[in-house]
Amino acid sequence: MEHEDPRTRILDAAEELFYGQGIQAVGMDAVRTASGMTMRRLYQHFPSKNDLVEAYLLRRDGRWRNSLAAHVSGVGGPPRDQLLAVFDWLGLWFAEPGFRGCAFVNSFGELGATTPVVAAVARHHKEEFSGFLAGLTEAAGAPPATAAHLTLLAEGAITTAAVHGDPTAAADAKEAARLLLDTALAS
Image (cartoon, rainbow, N blue to C red; front, side, top):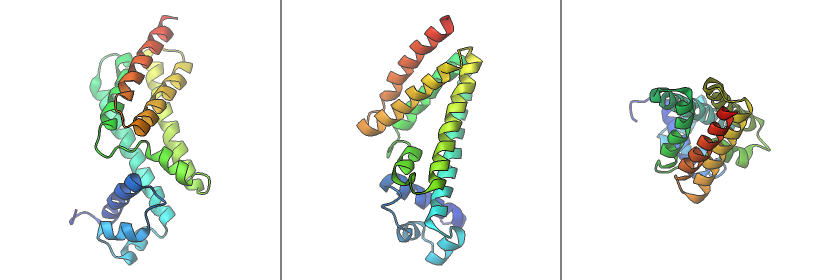
């Protein structure tokens, strides 16, 4: 971490703190301490906490979606298998140490009503995820409405895994997705 650029060090510290403890519970001084930066340096890169929160969420969005896409494309096979692989990836994510659910839902719940940029980033993340599932659904030959149903299954699994601390929600959602796809593709 010593050799990383200051912006990355700050974002790494902010992500660990914000995701682990909640955005409102973490002050800029805690980010400064965890990053090893001076307060002046912190504010040079992020003039306000809202700027830091936005940068944290945007970076997390890109990494999350890239990881998901890489996993799905690595599965290969027919589009139906790739679509179901989304739920396998969710299961891996749910089993990670420190999993606290969706950072975008968490941040929206904390700040969405009072911080428009947080609401916008959270909506963007959810729209991109939904669009990703829609593309896979279309490639699999299922009716377009199936994508909305699969999105609800995935989002429900994320919430269930976070609330109950149980990564098997992904396997349950995958089985429901399999049944949904079989029905949609048979009609």
